[in-house]
Length: 143
Image (cartoon, rainbow, N blue to C red; front, side, top):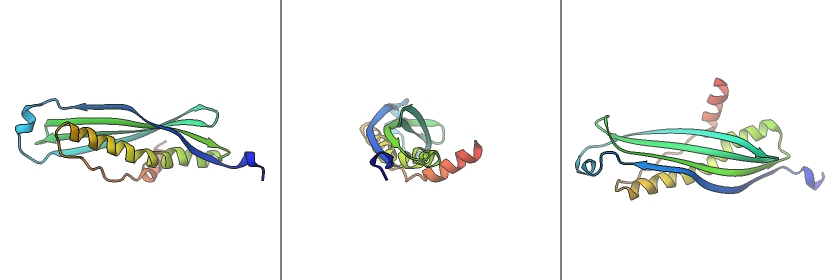
């Protein structure tokens, strides 16, 4: 088998594409007591940038509310990566872009969320692992 036909999957770059944190009711919210309701939303996206080069985004939005109405904080991060996929069958490439790449990006996004929430004066938010395979299969089923 020639060297040129070997499959290649590599990370070219990892970066934070977008990061925002809002604490709309500060400073009063820090004086209020109660256990917040934390809601997390996750989405993924990928696009082809060029020959064998793809961009993949994982966007996580975390909202914490007191009594279901007063927002303590809203934190959103889009963690992105540029990946090289060469000599990989299209079906396998779709799986890598939809499952493997988000799995690589998620720990970075989780750290960005935890760090920014802590810097805002709140206890860290520790996000549970996400099953990107199940997300991918659900999206493919809806397509």
